Image (cartoon, rainbow, N blue to C red; front, side, top):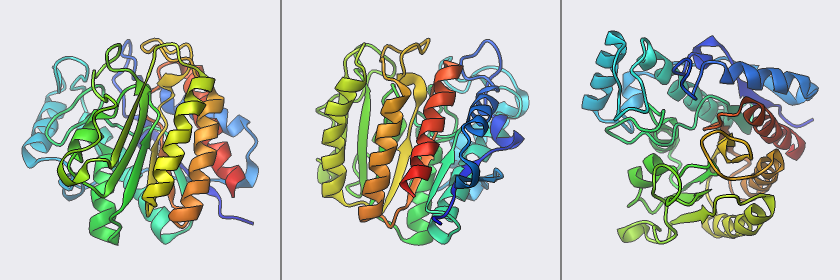
Length: 316
C-alpha cells in the first residue's frame, strides 16, 4: 500500500484568521476538515499536528524589521498590518508563525518521510512580501518553504504552482530574479482583481527571465478555459523538471466566491492536483505539498480542498 497523504489539522492552525465580518474567518479550517472526514478516504489520509515556526525560520524569507513590527502590532492587537486588508488582531504573530511552521513540517515530512504528499489547509499566504503584509497574508509560508528547502535540504530547483484567483505577487516579486524558482500562476486578470499584477509579460528578470509563467484568465472563465491554459502549465513544468513542487490551490477561483469572478468547479482543482502528482512522480521523487490559499465561499473551499486531497490519495 502507498504512503498515506498527510493532512495537517489543529486549533493552532485554525487560529489564523481575522474574525467576523472579515472574509478570512476562523471557521475555514473546520469546514474543510468536516468535508474531508465525510469523504470516506479511510486509510488514505493520516493527520498531523501543526508546528510553530521560529524567528530564525521566518528570517529565511522575511526581514527582521518586518517580523519585529508584526510581533509588536500583534501584542497591541489593533490597527492594520497593511493598508487596510490585514488587521493586527491579538495573537496574529503566533497564528501566522504556526502557518509557516506547519508548512515547514509538511516539507520535512515529504523530504524525510513518512509521506511523499501533504496538504496544509490554512496556508499558502502568497501575498505577503519579504518586508510587508498584504491581502490577508502576514507571513509567506511558501516563500519561507522555498528558502528552507534550499538551506536544510540543498534542494535548489523548486516549482511553485498557484491556481488561486489572485496573483501570487508575494511569491513572484520575492523570487522575480531567481532562475531556480519555477513559477506557474493561473489567476484572474489583474485588470479586474487585486493585486493588479501577474501580466503574461511578467516572466522573471535578469537570469530568471523565462522561469515564470503568468496566465491571466478572463472574468467568468470556467473549467474548459482552465484546462486549455493548464496544458501550458504542464508543458512548462515538464520542461523545468523541478526537484520539489509547492501547490497553492486557492478555492476563490470557484464559481460563487464573494470577492472574485472566475467560475471553476472543484473538478478543476482535482484535475490540477492529479496532473501535479504525475509530474512530481516523474521529476521530483513524488515530492508535493499542497496549501489551501484563498477561498471565501465555505462550501467551495471545503469541496475544492477535499478534491485535492482525494486526488493526492488516488495518485498513490
